[in-house]
Image (cartoon, rainbow, N blue to C red; front, side, top):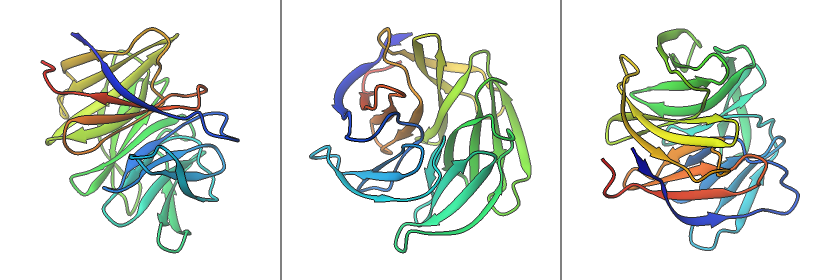
Length: 210
C-alpha cells in the first residue's frame, strides 16, 4: 500500500456543484456534472466545451463515442454532434457509479453493492460480476489491468484488481478528504480522479507504485 501522489488539480469550476464520472479521449478530460458533460483542456485546466445531457455518474470513451450513466440508463453519445444515439439499461438499476470501456465492453461500478459488472454495450447484458469489499466509485483500465476507486466516509483508495476474481493487487491511498467519485487513466502513468462535491478533478501519478 502506498500514498497516492497527487500532481495536479483542476477546478473548482463555475456552476459545477459536483464532479461525477471522468473519462479521457486522448486530448480532453471529460467530466460529468449532473446536467452536462464537460471537456477540460488538460494543459490549461479550463473547460473547452460542454454537452447538455443527463450526467449523474460514470463516463467512458470507446475511441469514438462517449458513454454516460443517466439514472438507470447508459447513454451512447456522439461527441462530434452532441447527439444521444441510444441507451441500454444500467446493471445497477440506478445505483451505478463508475464506467469504463475495455476489451470491447463496458465496465460498470455498483456503489453500495460493492460490485463491478462487465456489460455488453449493445444489449446491456451482464457478462461478469466482480465483488469488492468497499463501496465502488470510478473504474478504469491501465496496461490491460482493471482499476477501481473506493469511497467510504471521507476516505478513498485506488485499487488494481484481478478482473476475474476481484483480488486486490495494489493500493494507492488518497489523502484524508480527497475522495474519488470518478476515475480514468491516461493510458500511461496518470489517473484522472473526480473529486465529488469539491468540484475538482485531481491527477494522480502512478510511477513507482508497487
